[in-house]
Image (cartoon, one colour):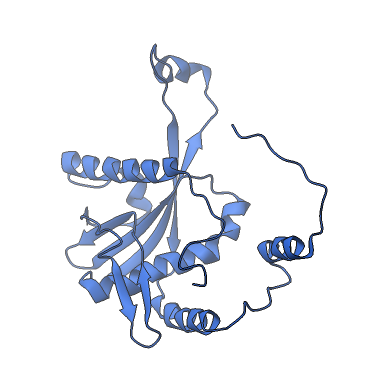
Length: 217
């Protein structure tokens, strides 16, 4: 907010967006050919058919109470003829304890989509889920002939699905907290368990002079 909506330090490699887009095309292409989504979705039940996902400029709303614009772009929306819409988000990552630590953040992300969706005509939202597409990096002897060609090689992904509890009512209190923080003249004190706050404090104090600089690949 104070940096005019420009985050001071964050990079997100574009390749992950490309993989997410490709994952969505895989789902859509499979449905067009077979009349159903791929079998790895089966653990979540009958979900419906893929529908076009609006870009961030349309998938948004302004909260009247806080005057905050909430926006985002779900990776996948499936429409069931009787149940409504299902919203999923792709994660190109292994489902490990580290990913599990991020679960609260993803829970808010998915429920923010569920909060926006009915307000722009996608209703009702009946379920949410994360789809972890784990890279299979252990190339077995039997796979090499198939995976490695003269001019390219292939990387397989193993899907892992995790339902996310649908509770969009968690969003309004968070928006109120955001408004409260953004209206402050100075940044609030950080949490004692926040690693970014600790790093910022070190930067301000000028401590921690010994460091390692990793080479960029």
